[in-house]
Length: 207
Image (cartoon, rainbow, N blue to C red; front, side, top):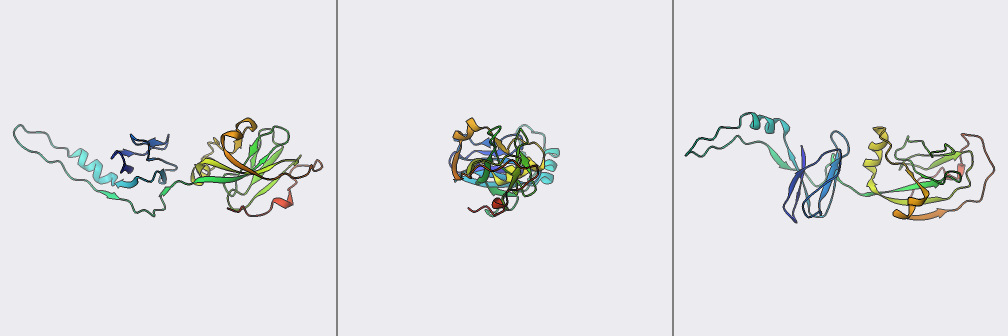
């Protein structure tokens, strides 16, 4: 079981996968992004762990209070998780290379190496995740941009891997809600048949 301790307000709380949980002062937060992996934010955060087996054992052996006597319950194993831990990482906002469809106007980005993600009208696709950038489709007279998202690379990966598909597309009228930079505004290109690939985009994503 993974928990967070906030050195600012001294709250301790358990993480869940359904939503991001925060401490009382809001300076520390986190959530599970898979069955075993979790991420957190906040400079006051301290990562904690509890051994599930020893905790459940202590609960089963919870003593009955006896009037006039001090009764101590069974101890269970708890520990401070190292700062560098592969299964409990500090979340970093992801930067993605996105492509805008000239037809439905959606901005589309790939969440993982093998995530070939199409816009809603199926005109264009983006592939490669954070390893490379590949795009193709029917009409590619599009704009490309680097967009900073409020989610981490881990959250994006697990959104794709679990097929939840909550991320990957941004409607044109919502782009203003994100920090972004248009990096390429290519000239209009002729209509191609799917799955034609724009060879100019076969480059690693920098930054």
